[in-house]
Image (cartoon, rainbow, N blue to C red):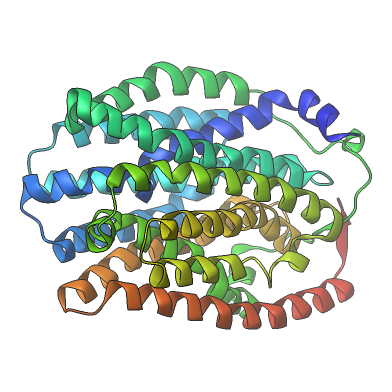
Length: 410
């Protein structure tokens, strides 16, 4: 089956997953941070205080996600969307209405839990369960929704800020979610899918079905976190403090916002490339290499002072994001099976959310303490290189283990 035929036959499910990822943008750091300057000014928060509040809200959402995420194993995807999407709309409304720091914290908690957390978790779990032989392709086209949001929404939101103000812009997003996203995504996802023989011959296998407790006792799972959590930590840290970075470098905020389109284009291209590589070679084979462009992006941001640094950083970040977005959707079912995928992914997503929470808070406090932000980004690049070496070891161990474990045909 050709890719075009596959996409045509599966348009409703992949479109539904795409839209879940697209509208998750309202709970993603890059989107929330667009209002960061106005929020800090209106609530009287320093970089460290704003970062710490964001960190606490995200930590709370990560803790909740470990349990809430399991509903994907027990309810249909359509029913899950009927719960998650309205809650995201409520969070956007609260952002437009909040007048206190406490309510702002609650709003951030809801945005992170139901935006970054449950929207993407639902989409990726659905693709992992519904596809086997073409899992990489399905995941790669679904994750394009994330890049669509990154490409379109920053410029749209900045334009709305100028036209109607930042609070009214968040209200407009709430209305869009309730009146458009909810009915469309629910309609697309209300028909469940199972892997089909017509998808094509299996090029890889799905592992036996591990339980959550087995995964938590697997030492390779914890070693993988050294690299797997790096994109969430680094990307969130950099984009959360983008207003400070722009001030530090003397760049224009509009130029930085426009460069998101470069990152999005590269992410889309390499997400699709990774999907084909995963279907052919398996996710484990990609694991040791996806952090190398992320290391390059950190070095570009730290070392290139003029506006070219924006675009070099965004392009390299996009390559790494493209690989990681597809890789993480296919890796867990390949290693741990699909029967408990929702619960297993809930742990993984919660840990990613946790790492994304720690980044802005730690970095903000370091900025307040006088530690150079640019030196921080350089150190992040070094971490990526070291983590890639560790993941090469892990990939070999996983491959050897797969040869000795009983496998279920994909």
